[in-house]
Length: 369
Image: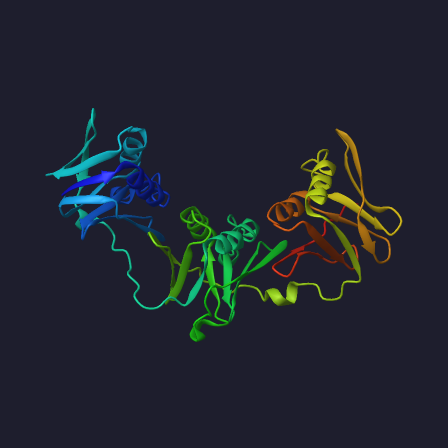
């Protein structure tokens, strides 16, 4: 194999693919990326057996086609530190030679036949949306997953295609985030209303593939796997098994109190009120009234007290309720609208945070007594 590569394009291909390569693995081949040079392109593949990424680099000159496996981190570091515009990759026996204008590196290789096969999925994409929309859906839900828990369905994000929108839902049992995004093409009829649980780890990796907001992303679900494809990259992930809770039943429907406020201002107030919380007193008390608006307080027996007077619009009877400020702040940080509403009913029922028609967030109250 002999390939002359544009260094910047090669770096992008190896860096993106390396994100899925495990840092430690009992299988040495999993610490490698597979390089395949053919048909005027260099294909770079990596996998951890649960998620696989394929990146196609078209900015190459192939003098001799071939395949090999090489340590992902070593190749990435060499390409990243190089100052050359082009690099040549040549495989001779069990070694890869990486040459620049004033540098020469020899890397040990392994047989490409030892690399785990990556599934290939043919056929028409069932879901299409812009990369910017998908990135927003991921950001507004993946933070609410439970990555450490044993309930596998909570380790991922539920994906539900509608006719013209895609719905993402995530929960850890104490909060629930739901986001909607418009599709660029109608959903394939066979997929409307279907439910798939995408691992949070896989979605975080998908997010790294999305560099151009206008680019189209195509999603296909087949058997127990989901495929996310852009112009240059494809990510294949196993789906999570398990029963996702009926999220529609969790969303409060009988709220009779409502606050409206600026998103950034509310986030600032929550952050300031939480400065004196501790591990034993994680909650912030929110006292709503028509006259005073909102007063946020927290108490720490070892540090003191915090009080923040916050101007907002509030409609309904006076109410005092406690929330985990971290959970509240994480939701406010991913909202991309200037104004939010918080709907409530009583101190023991969950609150409903909304931003337009595309995002809602259910948060359970905490006991402050």
